[in-house]
Length: 469
Image (cartoon, rainbow, N blue to C red; front, side):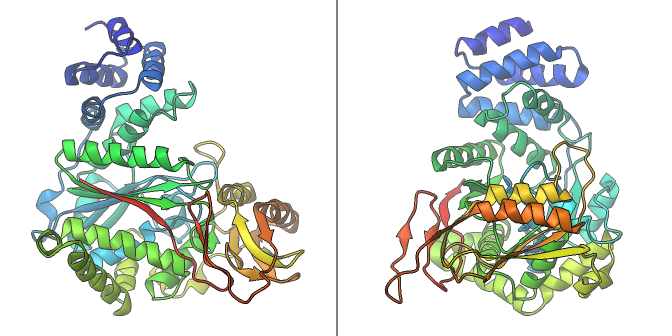
């Protein structure tokens, strides 16, 4: 095949065959196709797009470009091995809760996770805040822990979907990152190569997500579900709102603390609700008995049974016990998990107070995420060192009433100067509306797709869409 012909074909709106895409991905890994030609091809894809069949073939080619894990033989029962992926958001520590819950319900969870970049945090960064915990596992260790513990979270190795890693590096410097087929292929190639039978996708939408607009988020979710179906996997995608941070904590160790609280039955209402939603979807996909009930008795009956199992795992303490077991298996300090007061704390803590009274009408998740990153809790470039201790704990969120002088948040920083600078940035993230004249306010729909629950109302995630293969 001739690479120029393939670039021209896509430039002119043609459709690639599976063989052509396999040739391109192999060329990236082997170095036989130069970067400038791959970059040119990626730009053609950016403008011309791909059909669902092309997207599936591209994903399979990227997944097959390196090591693939066959985990099926490790399942202890007929239950499928389930993975979960979030497209990234501010305060999103859901993996830390849904993994232990699903595993406590007997569902094997094997997951490759990533690190944070810019305003969005990463699961590996959060867990590495626990003393001794390591994400660097060999394939043999990954398999053994999945078999013995039922839950493993590891960093992606260079051998897993290497074509995706090389292609992403080029996309990052050529303005082609926003291409939906390339985004979907990047995410799903790693999921397929990691060996899961079923995948729950949480596609975030809003200011605190990489997909800000609902139509784009829905299109990405539908495309990834289509790719999963084409690859023979069970896949469900939830499109969830991310206008304001999820939960109250933003920052690595702070989010670990909130996840621990949630696994013990506490935690913010919106995070607890999303945790239960995602864990329920994992059980519906991965447990054959629940899956059959879901199909035979109707959606609500099956979902109710799965939700009951999730609540039981939390209420009995089994989910938290599984989290402690998982942390210890990967070298982490189980005592620090059992007693979060032993986890590191930031030396400077500053309480930010409201300068006016009113109802919080907006809390820009991206601005909060960038403020936490500027404290040292995130990266501007891959490889940057981070401070696991720093971040923000939100006292007031959208729909809640505050008076002048009431706390908006607490900033955890390395020093007082950094705390004050972050506080100024976070104050700008808040918007207010005047207090209502009457005691109760009717909920109002906003463009953001978040729902204002009124003063004192419960904070809940808005499930914008549920897309199932």
